[in-house]
Image (cartoon, rainbow, N blue to C red):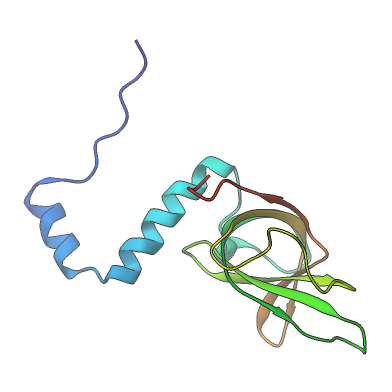
Length: 130
């Protein structure tokens, strides 16, 4: 027999906490819990000039030129913060689309106050979650 999974917060205290917590906060907490299994660092804890692995859901994917060359940019959200994943010289990558769960690894930098990872290694995760 395996070890039982920890019980979800219940009782009166849990009920009142769920009532007073916004839907966005509940979804963020659930996403963070799901992504713990990926072995990824929460984006909020990623520091500049740190090689790290992050995982989350792509919110937006846009094509934006950088220095005259195409660049595919995707905003990754993990429930704690966001990071921009940028692939230089790419117009499209199969599977990189909003709503997709992605695990990415690379060097974190900060530009204009936003965390950015250029040309990260990435892994597409199953659509149902990690």
